[in-house]
Image (cartoon, rainbow, N blue to C red; front, top):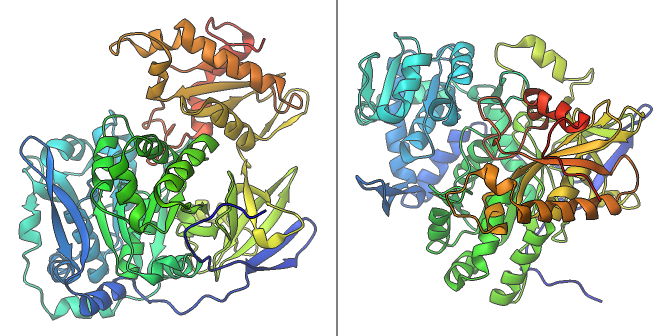
Length: 617
């Protein structure tokens, strides 16, 4: 009996080579060699500006004085190169360097893109900091940490009204600030327009030619869990090799110039390396999406997807959930989104099966076939692309096989197997942190990811690996029973979709497992309270409690023992805090940070001192 029909898509790596190491160790690499790649990311900018000068590389909707977005403002490859050269000259004039890089405080926009490209031509590293560290944070602790770690020689900020307070509190007075809009009284400022109008000279070409594979292009900060974030060094070698690995693993990128509609933040490796680099490397076009997978901003994403047809589409599970719900009732969205797209790709967390099923249903209704929903595994330190699936029949937790040129090492760790990385796409380390760098690489030079994996099919290694949680997240109960957190979280999320954002598993040194639940805004639809009702009232309403009680009963009755039985559950009123590192920029929950900062709540959950605990019946 044949399986479902998928729109034609080729997978570049379908076979692997395995070799045995010492006890409990195996090595795996793709049975395909890594092809030659550019020495510098900006080489590809020069190439496409010559080959396709009038092709749009970046576009963003213009906002009026009321903040409402209108028509698209576009930037072609030739325009981008010209302006980047002028910005590069301005950076060279200021004698910026690795020791005095550029720090970017901005959401994704055209100016952000241009100053990034200017830095590449000038050989000056840049770092895009999470906007939340400036606009949501109250103490600016993480922004201050970034400034202290990098000692930037220049700050770029989108506007003074949004980022001015953070700059005043976290940036030394003597540091020059470039602003797209506004001025600052506390710092020397220059407008972005003036910087971008700097007359370029031969110095730019000379400086650019002095850069090479080992030149530091950028710093990307990890999200941080229980400690402050680390600055991951990104070189030209790392970024370019990773883009070539992506191109070979996902041949669709080379078939036609990719068109993206993308909101993923450039301070994060998924948006800033994977997708930003994908467009430059493959001569594509990125329509910057000012929407986000939130109740307020998702309509902007839907609006863009009703107008622009992407060839590949990337998002996090929450984003696909909103899109799946919208496609069921929006024929214009279905038609435009599905017209040209060859591949969907999700990362950041598990994708619940009901969302998957809904997407497939809409696709089969509209085009008579399915679009492959692909995924993989990676991290900031691996560029991020590392593993990718081998066929369209992807299931939850599937990861696939290594990209060409990347060797992975599978190391037994008690009942888990950790995956480690070695290859040209792996970072040389953390900036100004030699001890941290040393601690994260093993004796053979493999980066220790902390991610646990297992075989999709032990009898067919060519299918690759699937996710098995995080080594550091797993724990033992007081009985000595080992709890595997990743699969348990995925089970809870799938059972409670679409009303649950994530589950934090508790029970370290306790007799049984508990779960703390972060809900989605859709939970309000379970009860009949007014929209103005507090979340506390919503979560304590009989209908909401009844829903989660029923789910807890089912989960408990289908468990296989104490290692998988949720014995107590609590719905959390307080959302995850970005200041405390409880949530990352892509919306996934940091288990360790939540457990650390809500330790009293965890204790109350297990000692029974809280009144709003649900127990299985």
